[in-house]
Amino acid sequence: MGSGGWSRRRFVGALAGTAATAALPACGDAPSETEPPASEPGTSAPRATTSAPRATGKPSGPRPLYLGTYTSVEGGGTGIGLATYDAESGRITGGGTLTGVADPSYLALRPDGRTLYAVNEQDDGAVTAVRLSDRKILGSRSTGGGGPCHLSVHPGGRWLLSANYTSGSVAVHPIAASGALGERADLVTHSSPPPGPGQDGPHAHQFITSPDGGHVLAVDLGTDTVYTYRLDEKTGRLTEVAQAHTRPGAGPRHLTFHPGGRHAYLANEVDNTVAVCGYDPDTGRLGVGEAQSTGTGSGTSYPAQILVTSNGAYAYLANRGHNSITRYAVEADGARLRLLDTVPVAGDFPRQIAFSPDGSLLFAANQKSSTVSVFQVNTRSGELRLAGEPFASPVAVCALPL
Image 1 (cartoon, rainbow, N blue to C red):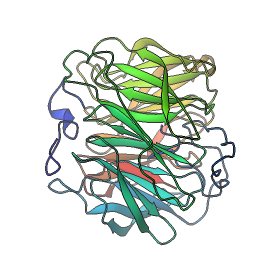
Image 2: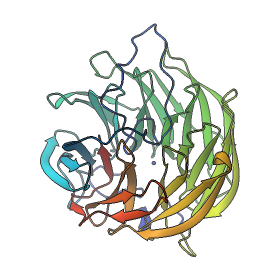
Image 3: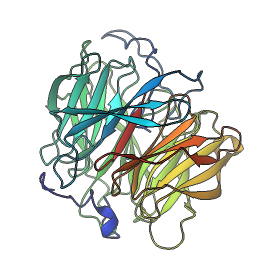
Image 4: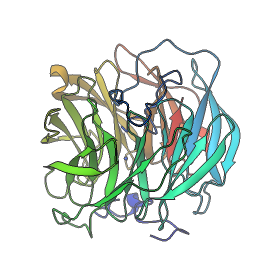
C-alpha cells in the first residue's frame, strides 16, 4: 500500500472480492466527557461499556465533533477535521483542522475524555495522541505494521489497541497518565488459519474490548476469523484463547456487542451479510451464526460498520456500495436480528457511522462524496430522519461526536 495514493482498502468498492471497522470507545462510540479518570498502574480497571452510546440527558449548546480523513490522496484533508454540532438539530459547523497528523482515518477517545487517538494509515503505520485541552500533539508510536485502520482504548484507559490491515496484525501500546503513548508492548500477526478465498494474507480490521472487559477481540477480514485474546493489564501482552470462523469468503470487517453482553453482530464485507454471534464471557468464545441479508439486493454492498442502540432494540448497518443504512429490529434479548428497511444515506460510500453520546443522532462519514450526513434517531421506532443537508468534509472516513 503506497502512502501517497489509494490503497486497495481505500477504494475497495471498485473491485469486488478484493476487499479491504464498535470500538470501546472509538470513532462512533464516544463516551461522555464526564466519565471517571482512567485507573493508574496497579489498580483495577473499570468494566467496559457496550458499543452502544449510553442513555444520558441531552446536552445543550454546541458539541465537539472530530473528523478523520486521508491526507495522502487527491482531494483529501490536511489533518483531523475540527467541528461542532448542535445536539438538537444535528447541524454541523466547521472549526478548522488539526494539522500534523498523517492519514488519520480512524479516531478513538480515552475514557476520561482528555486525549484523542488517531491511526496513521500508511505503509509504516503509527498511532498518534492528541491532548484535547489545547490540541497539542503528544507524539506518535509505530504500530509495527502497515495500514493501521482501527484503534480503540481499553476501558481502564491504560492501553491502546490497534489493527494493522495490510500486515494482518494487532498492536498494544501503553498509555501514560498524561495520555501520551509509550513504546509498543505487544504485536501479534494472524498467521493461522490461512487466508480465505480471494485474499492474499491476513487483514486485521478491528480490535476491541468485550463488554465484560475480560477479553479483547480482533476481527480479521483476510482469514475470515475473529480472534479472542486475554490482555495482561500489567504488561500489555496478549494471549490467544479462542478463534471464531465465518463461512469461507465472508470477509468479516466490524463487530459490535449487544448491551446485554451475550450477543454480538458481525458485518461481513465481502459476501454482503451480517451474522448474529453468541458470546461467552467466561471463555471469550464467540459463536458465529448463519449469514443474514443486508437488504441491499444481489452482489456486494461492502457493509462497513454496525451499531446497536443503548436499549438494545435496534441495529444499524452502513452499506457503502448501496449508499444506505440498514435498520434491524433486535429481538430475543439480542439473539435475533429482523431486517426492517434501508434508508438512503444522502452521500456516497458511507465508510463509518457513529451515535452521539445520548443516542439521539447518527452520523455517517461518506468517503467518496466527502460529506457527513446526520440523522435524527427515533428512540421508539428506530426510524432515521435526515437532519438537513450533509456537511462537506474532505474524504470523510470517520466521525467522532462527543
